[in-house]
Length: 166
Image 1 (cartoon, helix red, strand yellow):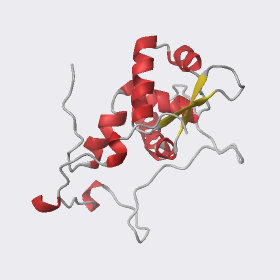
Image 2 (image 1 turned 60 degrees about the horizontal axis):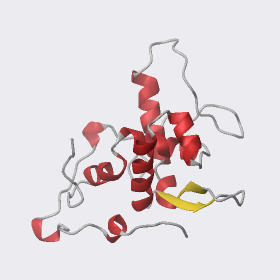
Image 3 (image 1 turned 90 degrees about the horizontal axis):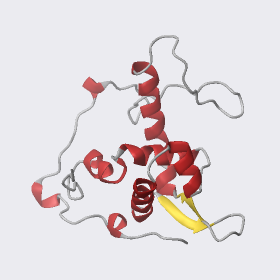
Image 4 (image 1 turned 30 degrees about the vertical axis):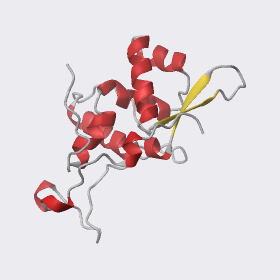
């Protein structure tokens, strides 16, 4: 079932979900952050159908999350590398991971753990903070909706440009 596009929404979450909202997409980005670059490696690690993987990789490249580059070993293959836009998803994936660790596992269930490469210790829990450093909860945050004339009606140029290679 095809969903309606959120590219003109004033909500940043809705616009973001147009690019990364399909659950395979976040798993692809997760694996790219772990160093996976080749189609066959994504396919083997994720166990997804080739046609679905191909479509998701293409969509992530078109959105500027991944970049298609020549294979690093000089072979005829192509590889997928995270762009700055893709790397900027790290806190999002970390927040989702920490939420999953807290709510999706029973006490004592084994799960993977992210650690600091240098200290080998688990990462600190992400926190939402105000500009002056105060911790904020859901009741401490409000949303400001722009008045109608300021709302942008056309997609942002970076959403429509296609990045394929350098």
